[in-house]
Length: 371
Image (cartoon, rainbow, N blue to C red; front, side, top):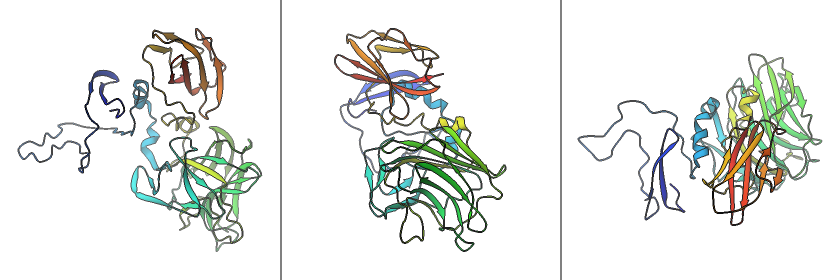
């Protein structure tokens, strides 16, 4: 249902069945959404005689192309331990609303985001208390943007401040000298192992940071924008600590909390190590960081999709296409041209991209998959 157009649509196995035009918005009611139950009917509750599975609810209308991709959502999504979008306070785990996070200091909601909104830190005492995330194996995926890459910033920290056996800590992600440092704590409170990103972090740019640990192999890995930066072999499992996982805070440090000067967004925590393929798919179903929120024009066809080399645009509408633009996952424009017959994208890396088509009257947005 689209409240702007007042149109509702029904699809079955990705095929549009019918649509209807409503005279009003969705009627607000206090009752919860129910499955297999017709309320206040004593003789027949109309219960399901069968099964349901894979329910997903979105607070916006999806296009047909987006609906078709839903069945391709990686199974790892079902194993999420927690997901924080930072779209609104109070911050909650959107897969379990009983798990809440609390912010402190000058931590505010910002429109500058990868998807929706983000959390911005603008003082030396701003941070977020999450929860005691202490699985044996894990993957942590977070988007980060700093306003000053020369400043030490503690993106994530689990445990005490370290330094002795009385101040044990589990793991941390820190921006140091323009690099991301991923560290694991040791039994003596000293850092057991640390690795750094090979790629540098620049100011005013979003980065996808992923760290993993596998308790069976004892290997920890650090990824930046889906690219493996380094790995380390630990001599022990993750040190268990009672403290909650914190963002933008170094505990028990009175002079420098190493607060973030910038933003975080889209935090996902998994109780297992994800593969690089699974990590690369985490954003397949997010909004892209560009301002591409235009509808698809069914009379302007983009094919084949997925595409290996040559992308074609067929214009069956009355609008004249002026030019097209292609953006990558990070919102960077990588291609622009007014020649729309045969678009050669063979040089692009495999993955999802956004195609924006500008006509004489408006703009349209499409998601394409480069094989």
